[in-house]
Length: 478
Image (cartoon, rainbow, N blue to C red):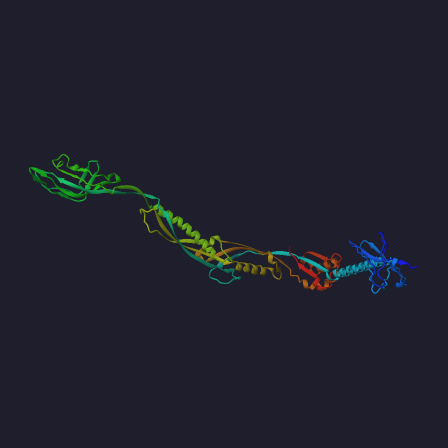
């Protein structure tokens, strides 16, 4: 009896026999399922042939999908002879793969460790040299007569800067004045003398209006004599211009009757009179603004102060930033003041002008710095100066701008140290541990070192690498 061999365990589902396919059709019976399934056919041992296969021996096994399945395809009524895989073989393959993966990881770790050990090694050697202070204290003269630093005579160049500025400004008048006008007009003077005769009035004769306002003549007046007609006197008359005795709008009176007060008590008082046929006009009185002496003085002081301040600001802006300018090295002088109006002018506002000249003395900062460094270098002998340690202090004595000289009291300081050539240590420190490194540097530099620090990296490095590029020797001062 032929023995059936399965490549997977038989499914628990129902095994259904299907009809035998047509003889010699070359097609193996297949059942179509709606749900995804794997169709696995029973395979007979290799010593069986097609003739021994009976239709009832062809079965179809339906089971859930699995990666471990074998699908048979039959062509020309012959079955493929499929190899069988022993059950324990798959586990052995998985174990071999894991072992190979572990070996690869181990090799990678070893290579990385080797790279870190041989390529990433480095040594940091920090040396703090001993320092000492040097100082320079002396008077330095800045002069406009020289153009270069004179270290021997302790002089540096000084430059003169100047600027001129003028400004106009309007100011209000604060004084007051009375402004007035006298009313004036024309009157007609009558001569009623009998017997008839001409009558003369001198210039300045007063005429009194019936409202009590006085008006005066501006010139000598002769009034023609009247004429007799039917025994009556027809008065002679003349038109004369008069002006109010006082200013003010009260004298702008309507047409009035006038008498001559100076003739009162004489026969002429009733014979000489006058009248106006129109109003008197032009009388007024009011307060107006007037320029006072205090106004002009105040304008000069205010404007001068303003122009001086602006001139000094402009002058400071004109001086480059690299120059040193002391507050007491700048001055301003008012050179001209002017106003087109005089005291007493009746105007609401008036203009005032001030002209100023500003001057300043300044020297370049780089000149004083170079003077200080050269002076300190001369005191340091063969030692090196720590660049960041320079401290330059200087103040000026009272300055006379006209002299073109500024005297400075200086106080220059810096730290110096014995020069150390780090290049000589590279070859002799290779493959030395921390203690040996410190001993070598200390013995060679004697008392030149204030502090010494040696650091290796990575942590397992215990000696200075043999590669010069992996060694860093640095001088520190902080």
